[in-house]
Amino acid sequence: MDIIKVEHLCKEFSYYKKETGLQGSLKNLFHREILTKEAVRNVSFAVEKGEIVGLLGPNGAGKTTTLKMLSGILFPTSGNAVIDGFIPWERKNEFKRRFSIVMGQKNQLWWDLPASDSFYLNKCIYDIDDAAYRKTVEELSELLDVRELMNVQVRRLSLGERMKMEILAALIHRPQILFLDELTIGLDIISQQKIRDFLQYYNEQTKTTVILTSHYMRDIEALCRRAVIISHGQLVYDGELSKINHLMGDKKLLTLKGIGEIPAEKLAAFGRVREKKGAETVLEVPKDKLRETASAILSTLHVEDFTVTEVPLEESIALIFKKEVDSL
Amino acid sequence: MKPYRCVFRMGIEKSLEYRADFFLSLFSAVFPIIIQTFLWNYLYGNEDAAALFGYTYNEILIYTLLAGLVSKLVQTGLEYQVNEDIKLGGLNKYLVSPVSYGRYQLFSFLGEKAPQLVIMGAVAAGMIAFSVAVLGLELSPMRVLIFIVSLVLALLLNFFIFYSVALLSFWLTDVNLMFGTVSIVLVVVSGGVFPLDIFGEKLELLVNLLPFGYTTQFSVNIINGRFGWTQIGSGFLCQLFWIGFFGILARCMWKRGLKRFTAVGG
Image 1 (cartoon, rainbow over the protein chains, first blue to last red):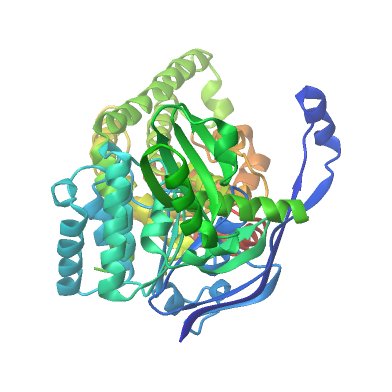
Image 2: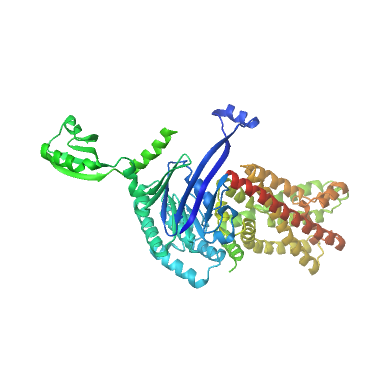
């Protein structure tokens, strides 16, 4: 069953430009040329209950704008969205109790007080009974490994610790839908990993529906089976993550290490040479020709080491972004 | 616990978190009072000053002391927070949760104010005792009680005035400088520096018609005995009227501003 249904969503912003320097500023004092930007253009997709969907796209693609419309912060210029039976921008309290949004670059906790105070405030705001509140905080603080930090002022926490607290605060009312915008931005690898593991576990346990945006492919690969890709405000891909490589021409990478250096022209006969560093070479080979190419290489060249890998997802996605730009 | 009670409590905790700031802000209230005392000393060196201003030297000192105190008590500061929320998108977190932003700000403001009120209350009691003992102020318990009621209303009125001003941020992106100007002008036109009736009856009438006097001068005129009971009664009516007026104004501004905010982005 679809819990989120988005149809032909559009959002236009008006803004004005300023030329460099004082002259531009003075000119703007008297006359501002109003320009329009289409941040989101005709985006449609649906999300099933319990799904984790990755919303991908380069900076300025319209990801955050889309999430803001879905959480009712922004009115769309046109189009529809229904979330669990509610229209987000009507901002009904009943709807607000069903979801949470966490933004990696925004702070929702009281800066000067310990996070536990903000948790308690959320308990009051969402009218959660004592037992359920205690259970949630105990369980989640254990999972996120922040139990010792509950009584430390938020301003004294590290970025990673604060992010965990932000997540905890957003889950106090046990929302059915979670929007996560650039959650792991600026975090170290271990913190990223911890948050990823937590989200995965939490989603499995509670079947919470999640839409998340991130620029770290590791986040996306670990958490999402499905990706919705937007570029320049338009939807360019909606489907399984694993099929993206297929879409981009189904290639595999052969990394081989020769005994001594193998000349480039010899290698080029087997596939496109992507990279060559001394004895080590990365070849790009069509997937359906992998077996024959590999055996040909092994029988004709002196190879010491040999590995087959997928084309990194980043690259395929970057290609999708770029393709979209070229077709414009 | 109800949400706004919780916000109120957190406001108290927040203001207790910064002790130094708290005491410095109290200390800063003393300087204007000292400067004004010198000024009045100089002005009252002139023989007919009392006749000219309509206040005796002692009366004007009592006024200065009490007005300095009252204007400190009703002082806000939430306008900067509101401006930042609107400008940088901090407003989003309130929009997605089932709370009213205005009420949230009000209770957080009252909470932050509460510890200050307790200490200031003690200081005020001291000043009033000093005025009674040294400067010859006459006081009845009834007046003290009414004074306190008027202070609470003055605090609310000032909140709504500044909240309305703060909501201008929906239309003007950066209004921090304006806030500084507005708060200085308002302290003067509310009678926080000197009594406005020294400029004659016409200005006094204007002060009575405008809302600002009801944030400071009105309360002071209750405690210093300058107002009779009828004046106090009509003063309260005006105070309540202006609270309602700015409350409704803020509500309308919020509605229109929010439409703009959600249309334009945050």
